[in-house]
Length: 307
Image 1: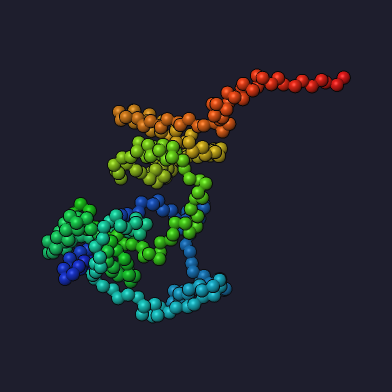
Image 2: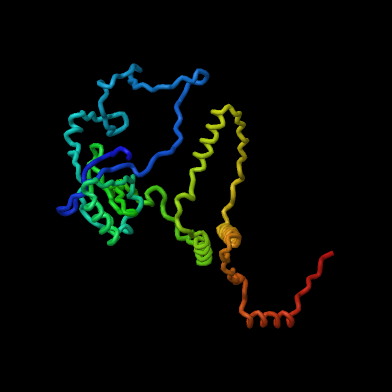
């Protein structure tokens, strides 16, 4: 059993559910150390003063907040300690909400809540009721001397706690990139083709299907080098910039999706028929025939060329 990051209880009303919190994920990032070329000696970093260049011991280091470029407000350790929330052993549920009401952008880090052996009945009661009602519990508790907003939801009979971002930590989507101008609105035909493409690529989510290919290739490279194999890097070729033709890209994507579906035995996706585009110079039939008739009656004038 993994070590518990936090132990405590969930409380709603007067009901208390003792739990232990363990990590629900793990980092598989490939991490490197910095070494001196030639000797293989580890590189270490030291805390040095910008002013003197001398190394500064830990007891001489204080915390400062930059209020403007080059100007800091020093905050003492005891001042910070006096403001820290009091550590508690309880997640107090404030509301039960629908999962669909929570934008995923608010979710941060998941953890499993494991029931206490002597109080499994209360745990099972909470998990079963939340699952039957389709509800998520919103509460808060103190983790590592910081108050955290959390969502608790049942997943296959296990309660999963997700730390959440507060509302003022989430930026508006158009803060840095303004929304598209009306002139760039897609046409109805482009929307129809995009819908067909999305439908043809729709599948049930299977997390085992997706792999971190970069990490796998990097670990394979490390294994080869560790075994003494000489590695020759392939030369990089820069692809020419592509001009985006949205309609052509949609048509080509639908064709490729259709071929893939036909290979798997599914009905291939078909692109909607291209609507006939009216000519900009089109003239009503009656007027056009009238112009033809008048053209026969009036002969073009000939001009004599001067010698």
